[in-house]
Length: 142
Length: 80
Image 1: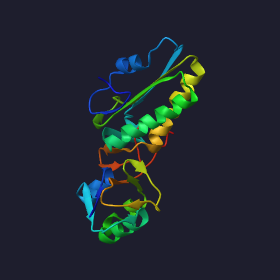
Image 2: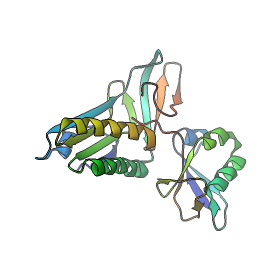
Image 3: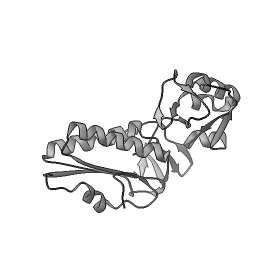
Image 4: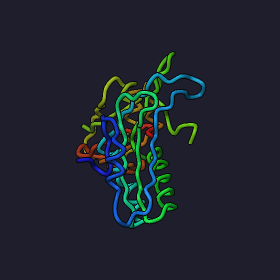
């Protein structure tokens, strides 16, 4: 059974995520998938290693979901973040939001990923050809 | 004894996932941070940039902490 707010070590099943937010009152499902980028600041990424403070991370993702539900009471929200070693192009984080109308779904989905990157205790370590380092704070592309 | 869990860059720099600070009664998060820096000077900058989480909630430096609390130092997050 998949949780609505989940940290996982396994490959993310996006179809199951979308099923979690499927409901008759929804007229739109917006999704966001964050993937491992192969080049950062001109340097090739070999792979990323993610670590989470799992209990708190799931709690914080749920808090983000609750904030969305307060604003859009008819929304359906699910999010999942993967940890462990991830290869270039693999999905790291997936978010699905359903709402009666598309505008709200897009906005809520955007809000969710921005908040995940800001308050959820998850960290990534970047492995490049000439070394590795823990990434601090948000990506440059935010 | 207050146990402080570490993750990511902090755990790596410390070479372990938990630090112990001998404290009787209660101390503030600010005092805990200061004691950690004194005891583990090599973690100084990492500790200064971290937020204290108590019982899975971010706290400010005035928050009281006892040995019954779950305490974690949270470096700047980089998920997504």
